Picture 1 (cartoon, helix red, strand yellow):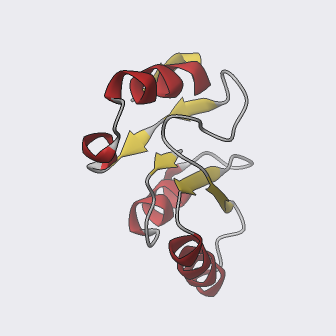
Picture 2 (cartoon, rainbow, N blue to C red; picture 1 turned 90 degrees about the vertical axis):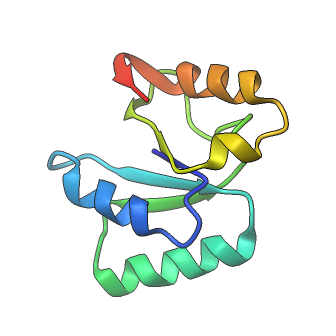
Length: 98
């Protein structure tokens, strides 16, 4: 999962790295960036890459869903950093990592 995925570059790299049958998800709060990311992912042909609207403090995935959470500077933009970090911990599997 890429928190604050923006235009999708890090999410695309993640989609290439996941094991077969797995999925990479980019989370962004802006509809314009999500639309841009979805178009770019479609053009790149990555069927295992999904983008969802959401905030780092309320990630739109179930508990213990992710093996890895990445974020590129997004934590710096969160008004409540501790809530964002707790939310990342919530979505990680017990063996997951940030």
